[in-house]
Amino acid sequence: MCGIVGYIGKEQAAPIVLDGLAKLEYRGYDSAGMAVFDGSEIRTRKAIGRLKILENLTRGGETMPGVSGIGHTRWASHGAPSDRNAHPHTNGTGTIAVVHNGIIENYILLKKKLQNRGYEFVSETDTEVLAHMLDYYYKGNPLEAITKVLHRVEGAYALGILFADHPEVIYAARKDSPLIVGRNESGSFIASDVPAVLKYTRTVYYMDNQEVAALRGDGICFYSLDGEMVEKESVNIDWDADAAEKAGYEHFMLKEMYEQPKTISDTLSPRLQNAGAGKVEEIVIEELNMTDEELRQVKKIHIVACGSAYHAGVTGKYVLEGLARIPVEVDLASEFRYRDPILEEGSMVIVISQSGETADTMAALRESKAKGYQVLGIVNVVGSTIAREADACLYTWAGPEIAVATTKAYSAQLVALYLLAMKFARVRGILSDEAYEALIEDLKRIPDQIEQLLAQKQTIQHFANRYLGAKDIFFIGRGIDYAISLEGSLKLKEISYIHSEAYAAGELKHGTISLIEEGTLVVALSTQPALYQKTVSNIQEVKARGAFVMAVANEGNRAIEKVSDYAVFIPETNPYFANSLAIIPLQLFAYYVAVGRGCDVDKPRNLAKSVTIE
Ligand code: AGP
Image (tube, rainbow, N blue to C red; front, top):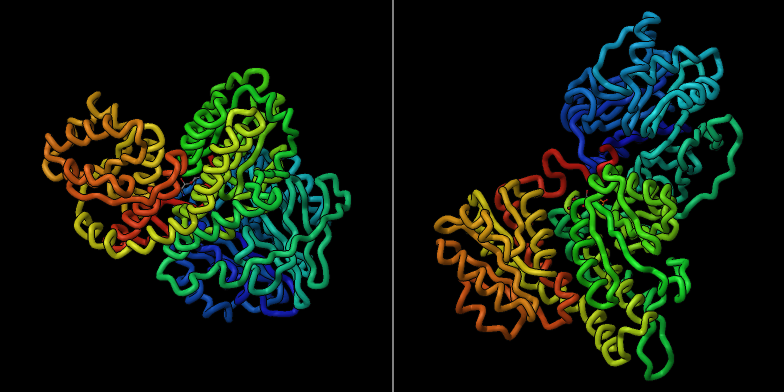
């Protein structure tokens, strides 16, 4: 997604803006630009391609002197990547500059109105409409012009705005696209995300929807769209600076894979409360804001999410239905939001999102709330829109996840769902003390078991190197193994660009098996004892057509080695938790195939870390 950085204060703005944009490169972009007030006018430089090009063009910012500036990395939505379409965009006289993240949904109508008033456009972007609208409404008072424009705009925006005749202020505004504001003794900052400013300040404000901020070198004021002053609480960011850096790993993705044991412990431990000597911990999820009785009243759960979060939701269905016997429907958010979903009485909606800013998931949340249903968010980014708009939010304490391909946040989402399922089962009297205690012990073993699996990375890397030239790789499984297949397949294709599909193993014979050729790699998940024999039959089906089968099975199951070509084993755990372990070798496999193919593992082509547009 696009990245925004702005600074105003005592220091030169351009180097700070460039440094901040570099920390946002993980969001995915195709061009970059900057606008700085140089003491008499706004100077703008922008270029297609990597941020390095803009840095070289401006000699690290030296050619753009000034103490107030805004910058942008663009992930194209309206208008192809080009110098012209890169941000900032300005009005005709260059006295107003705007950077924008989001989509102005009514920009075509607004553009026509402006063109009818003689405005000329130089780009294909929706953002340029904002620059000319500000010009149209500006009569000397920037805040007045901004609020007039934003009352007429539909869609999502995070904005940084410079006015040449008010160089002592940078303006920012936000609706549905994240934007934070920060301060330190040298000045004030705006940014799309915390890593951009962490080097300068730990005190940030998360802007809320339809808020405007006026940043001066010595302070920040917040306003509503009606121009009323707004009081805001700051948030102290306790992430270590290196938490957003690679800490010695080659890629953020590998670093974050190795953080999974800690992520799971951090997500688990605050919710396992000691019940006294010799007693097993009770699951306490205070953020639920629901009494045990209200939990008992839940008749159905709708889980809604995108991508890997959706895959976690598919696992959630099996675990919630299996342990708590609550009917669960899982939907892709982009489908849910447009099918006028039928939510029965007593339904609860759970939206899952690492970033908390995914447009489709946010829309699904709003659709559910508009229908009067309680929405629980399972979110990783503190203070994100979904986290703040959900009725309750269960945070997955995974810390900043920089790699576009999620790993630690996904693993934390699984654990959050396990906790929920066990909590529901417990309050509904479905889980015996003995079964509950066994599950708690299995949960607590997962971090160490993941450490064991990560220690096998060389073996997986060796196997992965045999498939760098693969054209198609299939993942199959039944039940929770199918859910694991979905995530294993996505991990592989999104970072290695190898075509891959996940199939419910029983579905293969209904078409896909025709794609299996001599040597096609099929990864067969077989961690579910109750479905094991069925999965073995599916393995035999594909082997009969020439497939090479990599099985992922439970330790001790040596029989699987007789029916597959290569077996990877996971330590013993409750079948409901198998995803948390089986996904580790699949993450490693995807990672090493991508590395072997020379792909940009942390910033795969065409992808963004947070898809804040439809
Ligand atoms: C997962 O590796 C992908 N980056 C993508 O599918 C992601 O899970 C999806 O876009 C949802 O993002 P969210 O969890 O931030 O809502």
